[in-house]
Length: 356
Image (cartoon, rainbow, N blue to C red; front, side, top):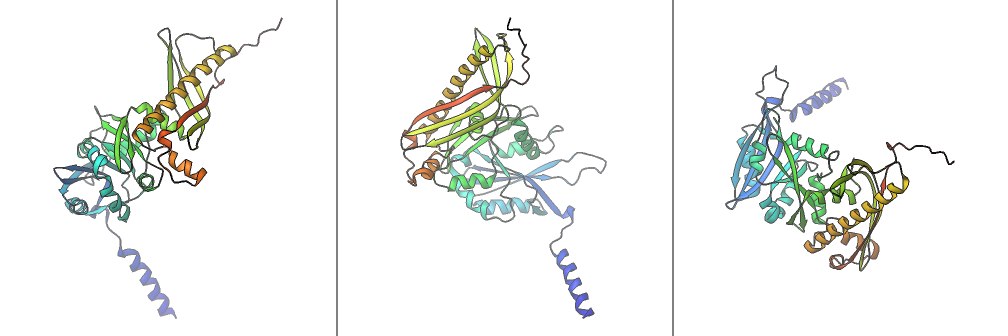
């Protein structure tokens, strides 16, 4: 019996070592870029450098790039060019080019879903040139992929323009009836990550680019926002609010898209110097911004209708109510947006006035 126990312990210890690699034998891929040029897939890996001096506190990266007309072969060639075992457990960003998004997304979707080495939870964005983006490191941006993810996280507090989309969620949207996807376009300008326009899709193809203000509306309608900025002018003087909470519900019938709910905001800028201690003034401002917000929501959905891009799951919404798989109704439906705009009283000082 003792011999059996000893053998069992040895087997366990050997099994633990079977798939073990020393860190310096791995090429830790932190980001993947995919482009399509001259009838070939161009794959770029951003790899964490293990040649950083021990006394340095900064992590740095480098890139490797390979091309091939066959996408899986291009991926394999790029892995081979690292001269080490490509390791994807820490990969947290996928960057696709506009060319991929417009014409070749279906080609890469299945392979990436079936690849057990690549995480399905990595974030996905679009860039004009993924290779150039991932190679654009600097002292301030030593690892571009991590910096982009940090910018996507931080943006929800500074405008809510970023669309945080994991690869698995994008794939589910593309493969599900009554759903389309949307992604953010990113760039590096003067050592700063910039979140630019949003891209909207129909089926597997990018169909249009929208101003990033529509990205904030997209997040707002999905109740995923911390800071959507809305403003208007009174005699050339700006009055602005930041929407920090939304409770919006969308219902789709055979001929109508109904948007109801409420949002809560705080005053950012009061150039007209309105008396915010006067409840009547607050009520009038809320009416004005309710009108502005509902007009912008209506305009946004009309653009989606024109492009047949169902990023708000309107076809799925109608199917859930009717069990009718008819994806041709929502692009023709009229829009009724009735979202109530509220200004929080927190931070506004009210005086208690003597009724006499």
